Length: 57
Image 1 (tube, rainbow, N blue to C red):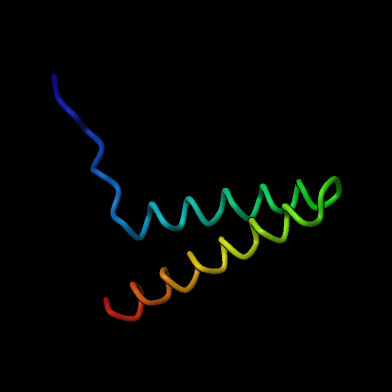
Image 2: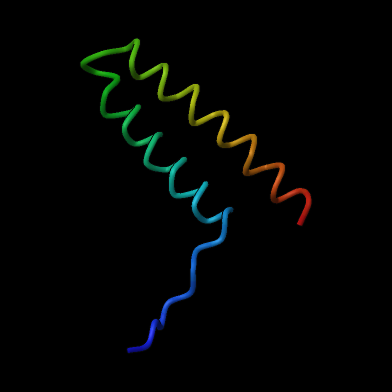
């Protein structure tokens, strides 16, 4: 059995996680602003990590 797809890089994993967090924060903003803000803060931390990785590459 062959594994055709490549493993995702750390950058790709972070980008996907960032995207999921931002979507969740957006959808949650209508119902619960505080939780949305917490998700947004976490997404911003991930965004800084993404920028560090992109800058080093």
